[in-house]
Length: 235
Image 1 (cartoon, rainbow, N blue to C red):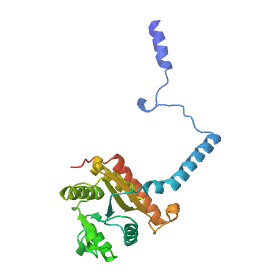
Image 2: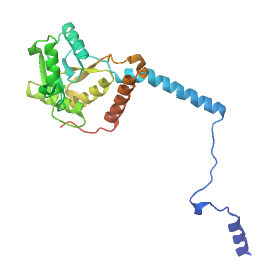
Image 3: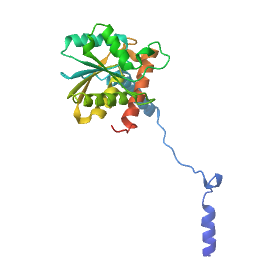
């Protein structure tokens, strides 16, 4: 009798399909009210991203004092804004950072973006003694970080690191630049930043143009990489 009972119990168990590799489970799905709630939340999140992502990336937090540092790739419109700031502020020296210019580029004779940016500022009317190019070596990634390292080493070799550094960048690139410069300088210097507005798209409605979408999307990816996946420490 025990054997018969065991046999009956075993035979009553449902067979699992596909040799027991798959099983059935109950699944809860949203009702129409649930779908409306999810759509509302998704719409609210989308609205928040559209209106707050670009201002978040375009960090604009200058310091009241310190030295000015300009990224050498800043276009001419940005350099003109830099000159306006210099004439309105007590800056006596501007440091321009950047690595090698791409071989074959029209302005390759300047060799580095630092030298190109410095030449641009001089050509727009700044005295040569006010502008110091600080070139960085050729790298294929982490160019902003490498520029910050080169600038730190230049300061150490020429009298020491200033307590405050005001970094000039463009639009959504500014938050990432500030973060990477701060990683390099650490507690030795406080990094402020000025985000110059890019006239190639409307920053308040960046999603209306392909240029705005490309710029904000690219910088979002680059910022997330630098924030969460970049673990290099200053040499």
